[in-house]
Length: 336
Ligand SMILES: [Zn+2]
Picture (cartoon, protein in one colour):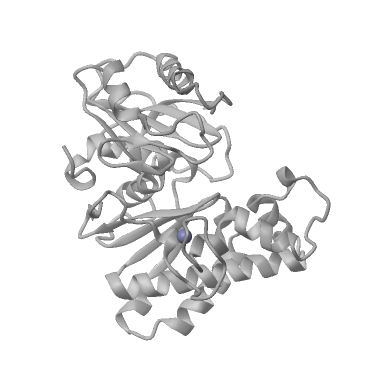
């Protein structure tokens, strides 16, 4: 029942699915470094209406202008037949949880911005719940996507960064500080390379789009091209055309993912790992070396059964996961 299924490559899919039978809807907000999406989400996780706007390029001091852009995108949605049950938000991290004080990478206007508190002021009386965007993707894939029916799964996003979320025994695991799921900083190489987090050999330092592009550029890929044309997405499309360095970069990312997933699967006895994000669109060029690595590194019989698959909900996952923080709070929201 993936009423919401959309190809990851559809950039401007409009998913007006008509009205909800019960009329019980919530507001979902998905804040990314380049795009903000807002939507009306019903109890079955269908996105009834949505609006997408580019994340405004505002100066460092102008956090309120950015909030206004979010609020006006919400105002642009058709008024639902019944009032919203609540507001679920997925945002780029880092953030403090559950207070929802956010400092999103690539959104310099928000540093220690009290997003949850400010949205409560805009939507008085409604529950407002904010979580990491990669966590929301994992939640959506568990609820209605590639992890449907799996009690134990990891949902991952491999894009500008590498993030994720764990669902164990059918519940989202938040960890002590709300930071469980930071699989991008699982160590996959004890020596190299240094990671932005201060660690060494993190998955993200190898497999994120920028890390991949930097590694390939050092080896002559798209030499002289502007940085905007040397993204992880460009790399995966060049790999698709058989570019040798691009292929090697994807294989390297696949191996790094395989090492991280092998360890994680054995530690947590996972059934499904669902992978999304721009880098994952390389398809078999990424998944084949990943699966080869799993075969080499997973010895335990129980863990060899893990299914490592692409996500199913594409770009709607962020909104659906945000909606799940309201509609499926029993499983996905453990704070106040
Ligand atoms: Zn790191």
